[in-house]
Figure (cartoon, rainbow, N blue to C red):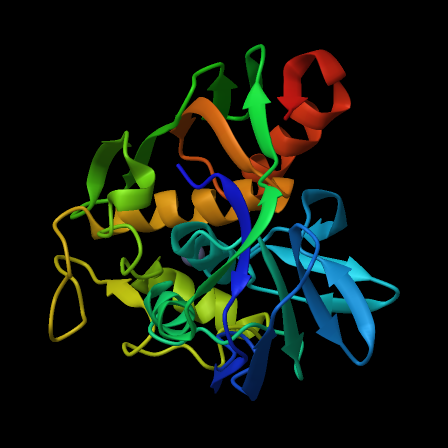
Length: 275
Ligand SMILES: [Zn+2]
């Protein structure tokens, strides 16, 4: 477990297109002294924190002072994996680039930049009593445990069906990190009609057709889809501002429920301890 606060060892840049806008976006990562990940756009600082999340329909979107940035979740998961607790992310567009649809390139960038360790201890969040949120047949709950332990179940039409995965050693389970975002073929048209997914292609998303995956290379893992839902969850949980210690069980949970779980957790001081 990482004991101290960390930031990136040197400045680095990344560019790509936004999944929904289709526009090029540039990111510049700078070291930060205080704990937390903060985006900067047009001079406005937007903390990557659950209480700044204002839309969760297709991605996690944060807002501050009239400025919004969407699709922060894969980048947040990369910070979690890289063990980085403090960073400033300058961005020149309203959407974090989708890259290959996973957190892999973000993580690579951080790994190459290196990690700088401060003397200050990292502050953790420990879950002290069970918290659960539900919507229809989807739910997510978190219970006290001394490590982060995640079990995710998803259910989609065939050929996906039900997939379940439990990850007990999150930080060392790298198959989560490069598992890509996905969509059902029939949903693409509806999403495009909403003016979204303009940058979407088989290069940055897995598309599930009637009987098989449409991407010519197929899946990266047999459980790539449930892996990606775990990636989203790790990114969303990191918007708590802390590494969370607790046992998480999720059934068909997405960005909205993930955010509601954090809001409910923080609404009762008896539910958690910061230490
Ligand atoms: Zn995702």
